[in-house]
Image 1 (tube, rainbow, N blue to C red):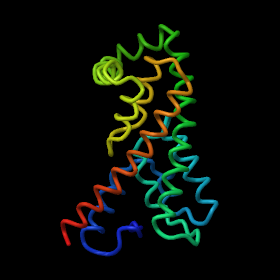
Image 2: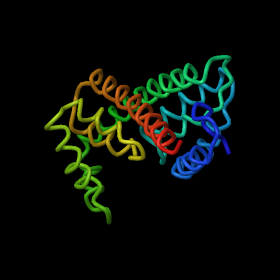
Image 3: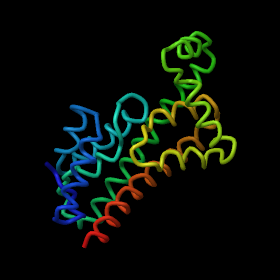
Image 4: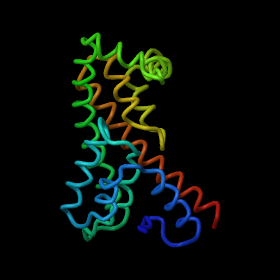
Length: 195
């Protein structure tokens, strides 16, 4: 098991690490990320983040477990991981955005989704439309800042509702970085309170 080096040692750190790793269902891709080393590991983080934006199940927080050995301090390493992950997810989101724009014009896709046992379209529209109407692209960034919530759902829901590629990419980058920062802050808060 990989423990977040930034967090140090301790029972709470081990517990939080275990919970976060168990929460990710990216399967083989998660394994690649949690064993990625060196500067080449940044490419793995980028690819994983790109794919999780539109195709992979699971959560993006797993990138925090990449044991990259870059000759940097733990905080510098985390900053690079967060930045590369944010860029990867923004790029993947633009791809998802394009797919969403195509699906928006494809009646059969929407009809098929509405007929599925779980009405994904209706549920996501209700939740995401509230954010989109109230906050616009900032709502997307806000939705993506929630640790543990599947990125793909928010990204596809917004991609059908919105039309500006650049604003979409910026919002997904900000939300992705925000989510990883919130995750690290929460873990450090728990660690501080347990000390």
